[in-house]
Image 1 (cartoon, rainbow, N blue to C red):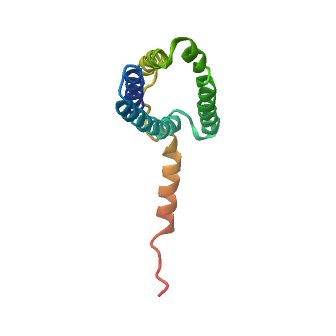
Image 2 (image 1 turned 30 degrees about the vertical axis):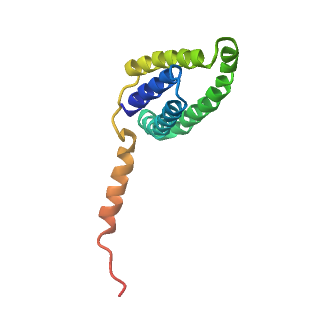
Image 3 (image 1 turned 90 degrees about the horizontal axis):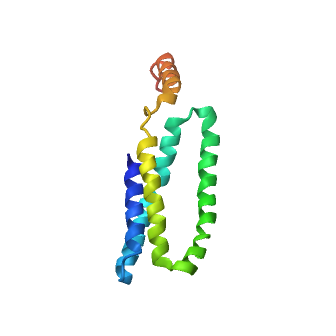
Length: 139
């Protein structure tokens, strides 16, 4: 749910950045956009840990991290739109695309059971604690 809220906030800030005439309001919107972005990575890693078992988690994290850099590379293509249509129009178009992706996320991302892959680990920890008994003092 946090990912969807942050995605909506990120999209809204991007959209309004295309309409603002004041530098200071634009600066505040960009700062708030950065705050929403800062919440996305930890939430994404958490949901990856809930979706994938430990033996597939490394690959899932690598795909996620690769997509961050590919997204950055594709973002440089926005200079083509900025050159032909202007930066305000580019902000609005990008926010509309992001809104569509957010709507898809609302319907495609579900909240899996938290820690479902850690059940075996928890049992092993409990067994090792139970078998070790009370600790003896060395004094």
